[in-house]
Length: 122
Image (cartoon, rainbow, N blue to C red; front, top):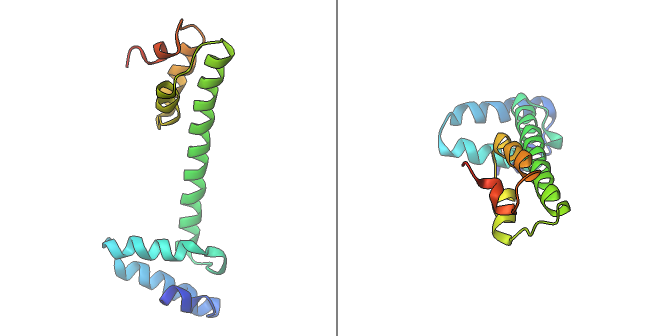
């Protein structure tokens, strides 16, 4: 495997090979596989591709963290109000990937008579 062989290569040799391989693959499905191989252990890659992958990973992690926190906030309000939160409601809230929708649900969670009512208006 090229990515494994590059692990022991000097940086000035590995960096251009990582970049050239990614450029050569273009938008083909193999390009996605290459990015995944390079992403497995980026600590030894200092190329622009590895930096791009790290930045994408950080952004995705932050976004996921914000969504998870927003879902937890909705559930916390419902539970603190003593409302029964069914598995279905919990699953829908924690599975939501829309920050604005979670924000709307949080606002509703403060006033709804039942947990299921946070979804009204969708």
